[in-house]
Image (tube, rainbow, N blue to C red; front, side, top):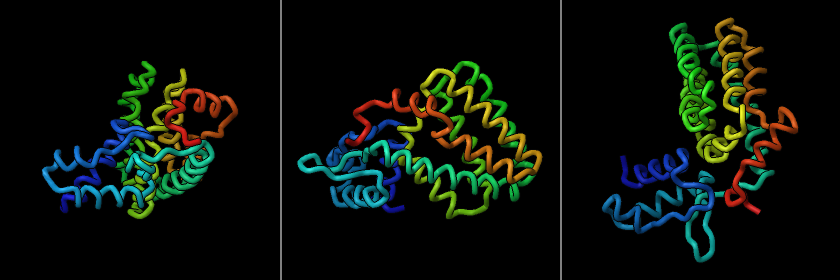
Length: 220
């Protein structure tokens, strides 16, 4: 693997996991020192991330983690709801019995997290659940697009779970998805996933999300 690709993956993971937040500056020299390389592969990696929409350049500040305004964020999630719905329909039609059991097992293992309303632990549990569906859809192009969108919106998604009771609600929706998939009902699975992903389930859900979103992360 090229050094620039390793750097790109490292920065992308930092954004995905919240180590780097929207608006945070990217230090080229720090990355060059960390990987013991010149700035050339670092800049190559950062340009790739800019093309992906994960970084943006600002006058005098260089590259920073891209911020989204509210309309952009809602538009991306609207698209994700459709794509995740299609992915789940395909997964329901194509997953093996072993993969279905894995999905059910991952869901059961997350019960204590939901009971504790632990939004931090839910981030990883939610990732694992959706990743099984991404693999199960048997469409690498769809999976690649969904992984990219989740990486770009990961920091925002975490704040969607900080409202009281939101983790529990999300866990219960996962349960409905598991039931539909185990029943081999792709149409129901599709509907359940779109409901699960959509931020527009109701005015309260959207209001809770916007209230919990730090203003520093929102582009104005």
